[in-house]
Image 1 (cartoon, rainbow, N blue to C red):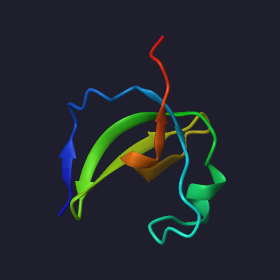
Image 2: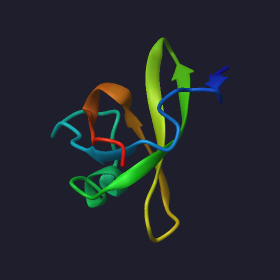
Image 3: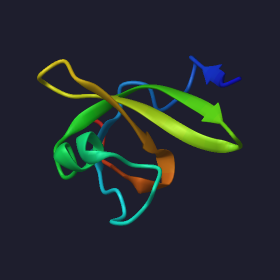
Length: 75
């Protein structure tokens, strides 16, 4: 069962995902949005790994490992 951290201080933070090629955690959709700016909806802990639920301008939501996100400065 995944643990949701809805009160994450990262919620709303602008990010750019940089998934690592060959990482079996990722699918074609993850690589489709790689390098595009999105924002963190929430952080989820699953299998001991922190995943960020990232929303993009086209309303698509994609999960990335937190460690694979470039955090952008807040406005």
